[in-house]
Image (tube, rainbow, N blue to C red):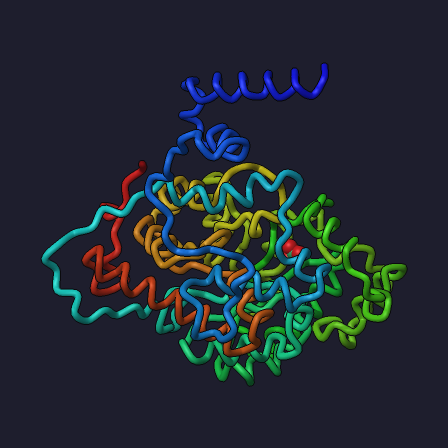
Length: 420
Ligand code: GLV
């Protein structure tokens, strides 16, 4: 075909496209518009007026309009491998998306003419009063995102009197974190393949003053963290300066929770051999309250009640465990129904908005743990970033409570949510 023929058939294709109902599809309309400015384009409905250019990064925490504003700043500041580790889901990241999209399945059903000129967000979690039901979720290695690490997060949590849960993989000792928080925290346990190590962790956390241990039961196997692996390849730093990949013991020896613990025979920092028997053993070993983190099925919620634990966290580990495709907000109703108020139910994974939090509370959750957003704040601006992230979440929850007509947390009731 010569170039005249090519131009003629291109004109013909555009003519056909212009007359085609296929132009109802915005993608095709966009394609046609690129090739001919005269082809009419459907306007987005609703129109998008606010610019959302990822290049326009906020420069101070005060500039943030929502928690998402922090993520690209953290991406810019944090080494790609570290950012990738935090951002990553598993495989196709279906669960990562489901955790967000799940909230669309549930709609708020506001009540009117209720005096909400004063709103009290305070909550009681396992006998302790907090100013808010928003909990700082456990995430390992805060210093990988900012030199302020877990202490910066703890100080930010103190400002809003949030419960904080500290990971076993913390880069700061539990003693220092409790001092920075100025109040007891919870400890998130990764039981290893070696009971003596697990026992040492429990003893340390209890001695440090942790009120409860959240036993992680949802990390059993390997995982393909594709986002991590791809971003890791773009990281040109020398990782072996900090990570000793050849030797598990050497790699973890420097982590505060592992200090002074006999790590010989440690082959896995997580356990794939946990059973209800282990939960009983943990209960018999510690005086801390025992909470199971990672429950997604009502059968397990019932077993947790029978095991006499003090609470559960409905969690898919921020979509970092299995790519199940199911969000935690979707799993919540069956669990709430089965538990029937016999123990507190916390929930995490994908909570980014006050409305997300309000929905879970209406549906029967006692409290909501938020993870990645405060790490975005930390990576972006250190402690002030975390403070602002938590402040935005509190502000949004407060406004949502006013809008649905709930002057206190106990007024957030199931009738305020309907399945879409
Ligand atoms: C640990 O909790 C992880 O998901 O990396």
